[in-house]
Length: 86
Image (tube, rainbow, N blue to C red; front, side):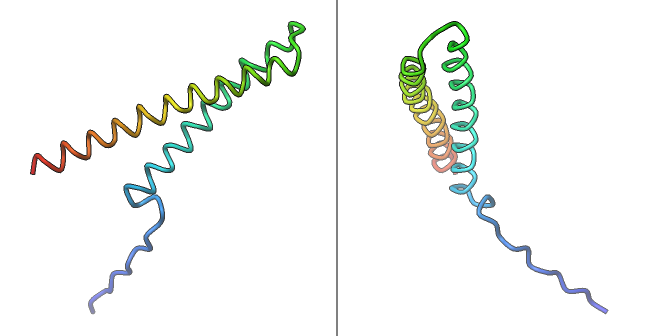
């Protein structure tokens, strides 16, 4: 008797683009938690909510933008090197 192999269902994270999006979202989430902790933690020392929110949104734009540029640039460079080595 031959056993049939079932085809494995492809998930969204099995593709390169899907895993890249997943890592991007994971990185953005981690950076957001870090920024929230350090921006709104200053409210314990009598910093206003408006000032803390302004710091939070500015640091979000800077750190998340930097993360996305560096990480996606790294992935693009690795892809191009792998493609042209063959």
